[in-house]
Image 1 (tube, rainbow, N blue to C red):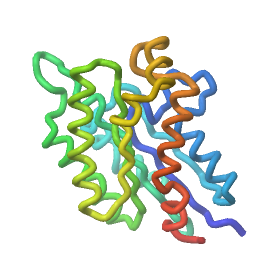
Image 2 (image 1 turned 120 degrees about the vertical axis):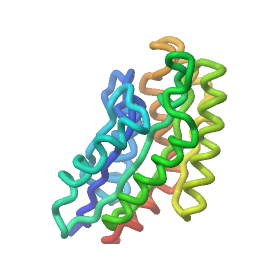
Image 3 (image 1 turned 90 degrees about the vertical axis):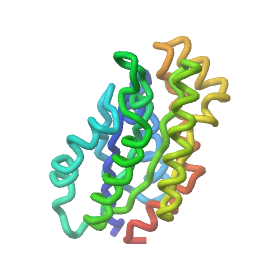
Image 4 (image 1 turned 180 degrees about the horizontal axis):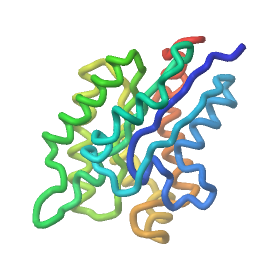
Length: 205
């Protein structure tokens, strides 16, 4: 009998797959890849368009608790946010980097306190040069925090900034969100970063 793995994907519009006409986004694609690899999972996509790290944190505990009630299952938490933190609103950053990193660490603590595996997917670029530079810097800070805890961190900002399909699809769409090809590229980055190995580490073989 296959292991009962259940994955909660918390994040923003990129986790939600905004702009993808197939409706899969990168989350749907990595879930499909898990099934193809003989590791079926139940996926909960908890991405909300426009959410910052603070917004995710505000809903994290009740949404986590509502989906982790079965003690016989193995749970994993994927965190994917940060791009909206780097927006300038009212002449200031929506969420300062230090607060953003602190929130990431707090959510990791909450997930691990519940015995859940954690994977962090860094924020992708949004097509605005100055904002993308801030996103890349935040991604570096996230990477330091996550790898310091011996967890997997998937860096996307730098790779996708130079990815032709991601850039061209986002430009043709709303400027920030790609279509199917861009999300397929992001899914492949997640898979290459050890997605299957991470699933195996959740338990059940």
